[in-house]
Amino acid sequence: MRRVRVLVRGRVQGVFFRAETQARAESLGVAGSARNLPDGSFEAVFEGEPELVDSLVEWCRRGPAGAEVESVEVSSEEPTGERGFAVS
Image (cartoon, rainbow, N blue to C red; front, side, top):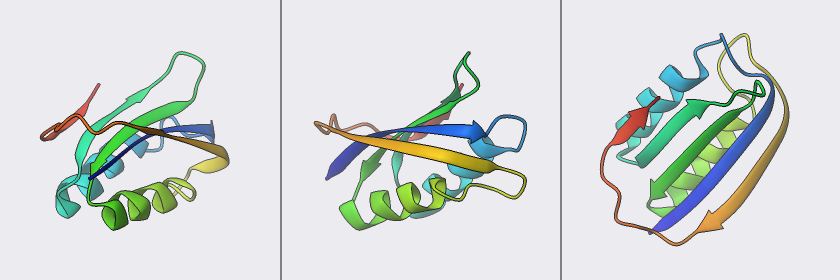
């Protein structure tokens, strides 16, 4: 299992980044969460099989239609056994 925290900056709010991230994560069986941050950035946590987590991280580098991703920071964390995917 792999767990990462992803911070995405750019035009990433108001373009359905959270909803599309949740749909993709759930379809892959990846747990975690997604939220918009007050500074206009987007943060997600993904936990699951390494190749599935990596595919979500790669998708975050593009984002949904309408997004303009300027930068993506990825940091590894210890897996916690998280289940499900939450959006706030």
